[in-house]
Image (cartoon, rainbow, N blue to C red; front, top):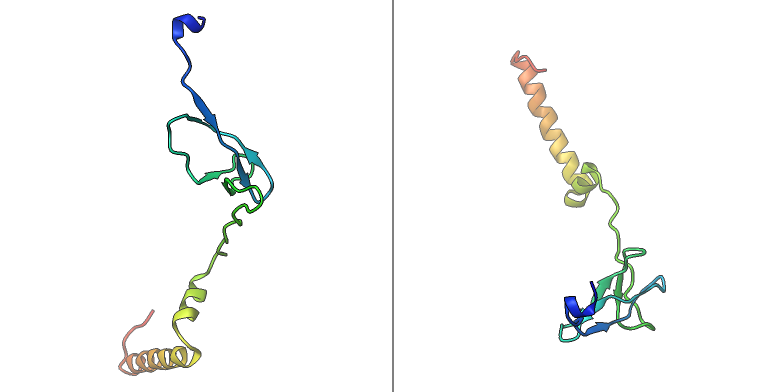
Amino acid sequence: MGEAERGDAAPRLYVSYFCSNRHETRPAFAADAQVPETWDCPRCGLPANLDADNPPPPPKIQPYKTHLAYVKERRSDSEADAILTEALETLRERRARGEVIY
């Protein structure tokens, strides 16, 4: 099939995006489309923008936190000691009453 059978190609606009690893990406947009300010780099996955001299910084990746790390954010050591003391007293009272505790 030639150009005559398919019709004319729509006018396109090629825009350059730059990531912090100095990769350049040139996606094509319709000439009348609104061009986005950011684009994900297909080579490394980092965000890219239109400014070659000032690309966006890589996003900060939060490390995995354990359950204990989240608890330590919410409770101080003195609060943890008070909770532990209260739980131990309750456990000792139940044992003294003869309750079976597993």
